[in-house]
Image 1: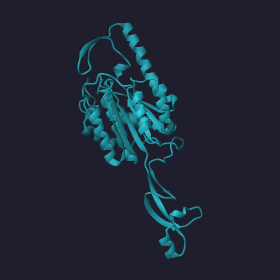
Image 2: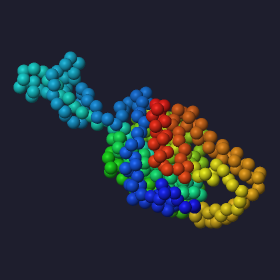
Image 3: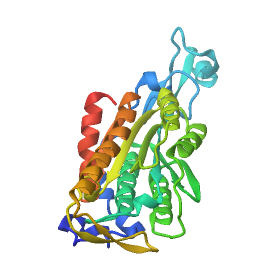
Length: 314
C-alpha cells in the first residue's frame, strides 16, 4: 500500500487495528449527531430523559394530583401530611439501542491505498460507537465472518463503546484461514432475531456477498428499525489502471495483468454494477446509504453523511 496521509497517521500501519487508535477517535466524534428514530418506525422515544406520569426508573418529585394521573403513583405519605392528594413523578431513561453490523469476510482484507477495507470498516464502526455514547444511546455490535459471528448486546456509556472496540480489534485483524464467504442474508437473518425493535442499525460491508434473500431480511428489519448501509470500497475497485500488479490473499500471490483494454472494460462494467446493486436495494427499502473509500477519513465521511441523513429525516 502507498504511504499514508497526515490525517491517516493515527491509523497505524493501515493493515492492523489496535484499540489505542480506535479510542483516539473519541474527541473527534463529539460533534457527530446520529439520526433520531421516527415514531412510525419505533415505539421508543430516542435517547433522552423524559418526564412522564407513570411508573419509571427514578423518582423525581411529588406534585398535586391532577385528573387523569395514575392512581397507582399516588404519594400517600405526602397526601397524609398535607391533606391534599399528591402523585409521584418519575424520570425514565429512554435509550435507543444502536447496532453496528460489521462484515469481516475475506474480501474486506483488501486495500491499495491508505488502509485495508477492514481497517476502514473498523474506524467507521468505532466512530459510530463514540457518537452513540456522546448522545446517550446504547451501542452494540454484530460481527460476522465465514467461520462464525459474535454478538455484543447494546450497552450504555464508555463501557459499551470499549466492548465494541475490543470486538472490532479481535475480529477485523487478519487471521488467515478464511476460504469462503457466507451470504450477507445469513447474518441479516440472525440480526433480525436478536435486535430490539426501535434500534438504529448500521451495516458496514463491501456488499460483495449479497443475494436475493437480503431484500426480504432488510425489508423486515426496516419495518421496526432505522437502517443505514455503509459500503466500504477501495479506489482500485472502481477504476483499474493498465499495468501488471502483484496481488495476494494473505496466503497466495500472483500477478494481475490489466493491459488488455477489453478486460478493463469488463471490469468497469462489473464495478459499476457492484456499486449500484446494494445502493438500490437499501434505497428501495427506504434505508440510509453512504460510501466509505479506504482513502477517506471515516470520521469526516460519517459527519458529512449523518448531516444529510438527519436533514432528510432518515
